[in-house]
Amino acid sequence: MNILIIKLGAIGDVLRTTTILPGLKDKYENCRISWVTKRESFDILKNDNFIDSIFLMDDNLKEKLNDENFDLIISLDDEPEACKLASSLEAKRIVGAYLKDNKRVYTEDSELWFDIGLISRFGRKKADELKALNKKTYQEILFGILKIENKNYEPQLILDKKSIEFARYFSKKNDIGKNLAIGINTGAGGRWQDKKLSIEDTAGLIDKLNNELKNAKLLLFGGPEEKERNKKIKDNIKTKIIDAGCDNSLMEFASLVNLCDVLVTSDSLAMHIGIALKKKVVCFFAPTSPQEIELYNRGIKILPKKGCVCCYKPKCDIAPEWDIDEFVESVKRLLK
Image (tube, rainbow, N blue to C red):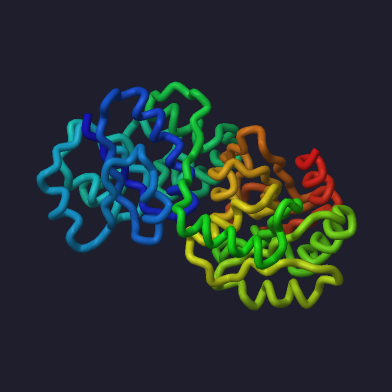
């Protein structure tokens, strides 16, 4: 059985999709699995022993795949280039999105996912309504589509020796050692403004955690676009925090998340990394779906006391309001 998975991005979505790999191996004994993704997601997949080959979405991809005959193509991306690729390859069966008459469509057996997405046959407005009504996790949806029995499969992220050594050095340098380590990741890129916790709320959260957990070390996470935001957070706090930096490579970032006993995070890449590394996670949601996220009984989801939930608007009609004490109590509960 020769299987090709097409899942290009975002990185967090690629990571959570790895959940299907052990299920596919169990269902199709001795199957060979290849994966097409974008370069930025390569490191997430490169150490996964369930994947036999990884192909990058580049100009020579079609040429590289020309000699391949796939029994099954699992096309989980609605991007035009992904759909075009799925339609251009030799395959006995396609599950997911592809091109038909130059239009992006999807197979009937994948409706559970694509009906609530950007290329929904119902249109964007109805798709968003269906997404808000959905109660299944992303993993449950994929298992249903692929007829995989759910045996508590989880996403995988395998850290390499270089990244582990990077984290070990960071821990020693910052005297983390055997102290409790709590990660703070309250930014979330720029697509959905209200995914983030405000600078003021983040600073308040840090101070409360420091005051109530005297033996804890707090780590502040962020990406390249959050340098100024994290600087303002540090300027606003009255207590201490360890700056994890905003210029780490993807695997360095993951290795630092791996130091944490609990990660407080938005619905973001950090959250998906924490879940894959089997961390305890406190995650908060406003415009995106909390139902889709599987925490494997290791986490707590927080919703705003006031504001939109699962509206998928770039800016919520009603800005979310948060109870910071709920964040603190959730961390303490996970530490018990």
